[in-house]
Image (cartoon, rainbow, N blue to C red; front, side):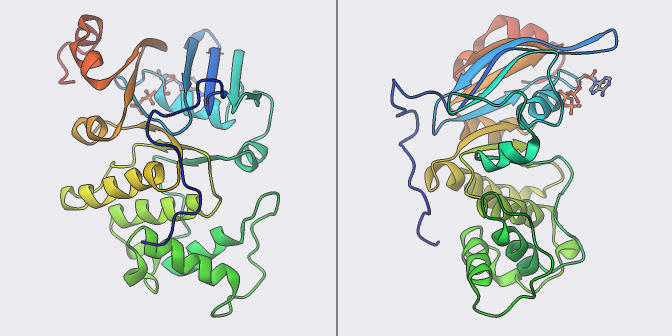
Length: 267
Ligand SMILES: Nc1ncnc2c1ncn2[C@@H]1O[C@H](COP(=O)(O)OP(=O)(O)OP(=O)(O)O)[C@@H](O)[C@H]1O
């Protein structure tokens, strides 16, 4: 593993006076006659990992879309480190330190693993992705790509076409590309989706490293409960667009309201 680029605080050791890394206040989204999210309020202190669960259609992806700026809320606010970014573009939120992976892979399938990482390494704050500059072995972006791939355990796949990677390695590559932008807050949307069971522990460790080695604050939607509960400090439960609970995994699992919301589903 390469040296951490930005040592983070111990889990849960956020400074009581500091603004939370991420905060949403009374966040609502109405589309046509449908209330997709209603008055969602919570905060994530710097360095925490928080899971987001809820039945299909509960509003998890929509919440991520509002936090990352894909959608504008009907009302309410999104704050990053105390700064109101509700009306700020996706790009400027990324510059402000917000990184996101999607349910569907966002890598360039025709490029090699190293070329993908190198492109991400070219992105520095406030600068656009450049497809123009040709890779030179040993240039700064190539060296950074080497480090990133080493960090997520993909160095041995550097020359492989990204399209040929198994799902678990695609997710690792996406995380390597996220790390290139030195994010402070990371949104992970179902990172384990489609990942073979044998690859789950390795990917779990890479996600843990985001938090432990880089001090990233992480909000992750995940249906794989065993993985989620092994990683997160708190769990937010969405149900029909409402925040039903936000507590430790143990408290959430024991909450009768959550149990009844999941009636018929194993929580
Ligand atoms: N652009 C849209 N227009 C109308 N309805 C929408 C739109 N986007 C989402 N919805 C609805 O909002 C609700 C929440 O959707 P969302 O995708 O956020 O749920 P989810 O919790 O992520 O579900 P899943 O676990 O299946 O991914 C769903 O009923 C969905 O049909």
